[in-house]
Every structure is written in C-alpha cells, then in structure tokens.
Image (cartoon, rainbow, N blue to C red; front, side, top):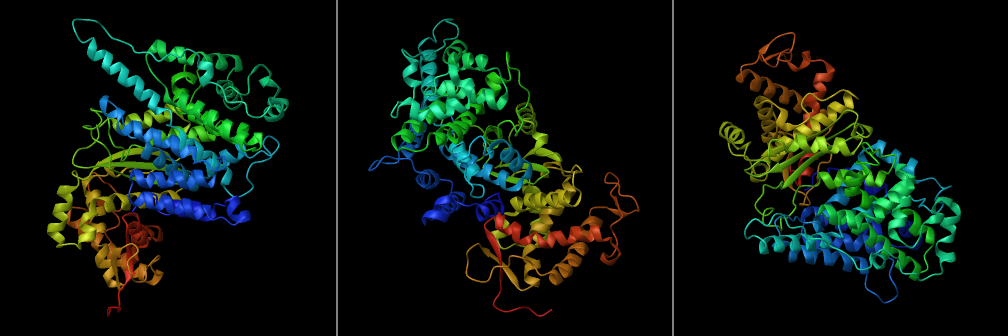
Length: 586
C-alpha cells in the first residue's frame, strides 16, 4: 500500500478546513482521496489530481480563468518529459514534489517537537492575526505551497544545463578547456517585480507600518521580500542578505550553476502577489503565509549554497527558526524513491523503488529499498552526514535518526531457504516477504522506543541486523498466514469483501504469543543458540530459551507485539486480515 501506515489517516482525521466547516465544501475529502489514489499508483495523472485538489481548494483565480497554478506545474512536467532527456543528469520533480508534500504531512503528524516548533514560530496572533483558527490548517496551507511549488523554477535549470552540454559538444575539439554557459538578463527587474494592481498604500502600507525595517526595501520586489524574511527568521544581517540576493544572478553566472529554488521563490511571490491583488484578498495573506512558504522554497538550496558560507556562516537550521524551510530541506533530501530518471546518466543509475519509514516523537528511521542492485555502500552515511550538517536533527529526533538501504536481491537467499523449509506460502505473502520482514523490524523498533524512551536502538536499520535476526523476521513474515488461520482469519487484498480485523483480541494475542515464543525457541536452537543467564549475541547465548510462562512481562510483551502488529503490517503492503466464513475448531 504505502509506507506511512496510519500517519496520514491520523493527520487528516484531525485536520480542519475552514471552507468545509463554514461554507459547506468538502475540500478535505477531495485532497485526502487524491493523496490515497496517488499512493496506490504514483503516476503523473495521480500527481496532477493532488495538485488540482489542493490548489482548487485554496483557489485564487480570476472569474472565468483556469487555475493558473496548475498550468504552471504542467509547464514543469512538460519540460522534464521533453527537454530534460537531452542532458546527462535530470530526475523527476513533478511526482517528487507530491511525495515531498506527503512525507512532510507524515512527519508533522508523528512528531510533536515539530508541531510545537511550528506553533511557536508561526501561530502568534500579534504578528499575523489572520492565521487559520482551524486545527492544523495554517501548517497545511503553508506546507502545501512550499512542497508542491518548490521545484517550479526547474525549467530554468534545465535550459542552463542544455546550453552547457551543447556548447561543450561544440567545443570538444582540441584542448579548449571548460566552457561555462551563463544565463543573463537584460533587465532582471522585470522578473523581480510583482505587477502593481492595487495602489501601494493599500496593498503594502500595513505591512510597512508594522515592520519599520522594510523602509529601505521595495515591497513589490520578491528579492527584497525574501531578504527581509531571512533577516527576521534566521537573524542574518539585512543589508548583507539583501546584497547577496540582489547579486545572486551574477554569482550563479560567475560560478557556473543555477539555483532553481531562487527562481521558484520569485515565481511564487510574483504570481501570488498578482492574483491576491487582482482578487482583492487581504494583503496580509501575501506578506505572511505566502512569503513564509516562498522563503522556504528559496532556502531549500540557498541555505547550504549561501547562508552556511561566508559572510553568514550559519550552522544547522533549527526547526524553531524556520519550520517550513526545515521540513522542506529534510523531505527534499530524503525523497529519493520512485524518481524517474530523464537525464542520460540518471536513467542508468540504481534508484530506490520503495521506502520504509518509521517516525515517532523520538526518532526517525528510513530504509530505501532497491531491486537486485543496492545503492552505493556509502550512500546512507553520506545522507545522514549531509542532513546533520544542514539541520539540527536532534531537535526533532533525540533518540536517533538513521538511513538504511536494502536490496530485495540480498534477501533472496534467506527467503529461498525459508520457503524450502516451510513449504509454499500463499501468493500475496510470497510477493511481499522481503518487505514484510523490513516492516516487522520497523514496528519492533517503534515499540522499543515507546517502551524505553530516549534510549538508542540496538539495530536502527534492518541492514544492521545479523543474518540470524534477519532470518527471524523473515520467519515471522512467513508464519502470518498460519497465525491468522488459527484465529479464523485469512489474508486478502485490502478492500476485499469480508470483515477486516483491525485489532486482534487480547485473548487470541496471548495464545499466539505463546506459539510465537515456541517457534522462536525452535529457530534459536536450530541456529546453535544455548541457554545462559546473561545474553551474549557473539557466543549465541540467551536467557530466553525457557518456556513462555517463565519469561518476564517485558519479554512477553515482545512476543505479544509480534501478534498485535499483524494488521498494521498487512496494511503497509496493501493487504488485510479478514474473517473467514466459519471459525475453525480449536
């Protein structure tokens, strides 16, 4: 199904949409349904439905006009599908942006530290009295703009890369040296200007009066607005950051790169500024939530390219400084799965096809899943190192933040051995055996974190496990159908006819937990483990090779969790435990 478990259900169950409550709409239902359809099939059509549901719900469009925000995103898709095929490195950003949006909703739902950071930084009525009073909607709106629009400037980067490659080909005779293709503007002020529809004293004066520091700035220039937003959120010097942003086009030309986030932020401010004036929306709507989202879009590349370098030299970004920017950097860097490669090199590289995620108030554990080939061995460590450099990760995940990488091919031999010993599994389970094993480990870790708050996990990633413990998870996955059969249930695709079992009754949990412990003892003894009062993994000694009734309650709970987790595990792979027509005899 999808890697988020119940995270998204929890978010949408608690989300309130103002127009639904007060104007009789059903926008939340439309957005929720579009996201669920996208998670079933991550196609461009499904991504379009998410864009359309969000930007139609928060519609700013002149009478009789199409939704121009959707048109803008279609331009991004068109460029990537056509122009990007001529360059070496280019990956999908259209579907990617929807995945970033959904990942951010999951983190917000599951991590109280981020929610508190957002509330502290944003929901101060003395600064912005018009923020939504509906539950979680202010976050939902700001995050939607930032996540769904953060790459709309990418066509400019594609054009630059195309020009660079073509000129490199033309000059590939003799030893000409490196050719740098630059993008210049005859008059950048035309790009960096919001059309003035309403008189300045109507649209900008209230913001200028409330914030005297903007006196020297032009509140119709996106670059000036972005400079002020970075000054207020990050505490950087206003004159220095204003100068850096004003000179950024020349800086990019000098060093031969294009930061699409810079252009994406300008586009968002230019379009929203024009439409908010045209539709006679409150100016504060532009100068607070939209500007906040646009500055997050700017920072998703600009933070590491500029703000962490002289003269600013900022350290890792705190979620309390700029929560939306923090979340965008985190999700943008993590979202690597199911990204189509358009560039010549990217089409051939190993790409994750799936993801397993665990997010709690204490930790985040993410495992990329590939096919027969794994990502480079250094990939997980480099990802963690980069994010720790960019972000104060411990502010959200004090018990740990880890990234792993699993190949379904690596598990094939273990799975094959298991099938040989255990007979033929029902087809739905056989297809998902490896993924189920990884999910079992994730849920085990999640339960451990809840039991032992603040203590580090022994094996944060499935890949960290010794083969014997990987095998144990595979055995648990293999035996799910047998356990279900014992309580009169069977595994079926989610949504099938029949009564789904959302929770296993506790009396049946206890019976199956005893069976699970007996199977675990058989597995350990077959693997050469012996009894000892003190656990020693290296010597294969364990104090738990005893009958179930001799175990302590905390160890019994681990066996019980194996059973309680079954419905949640099946949900993660698009299956469900359903009641059979008649119960078996015991």
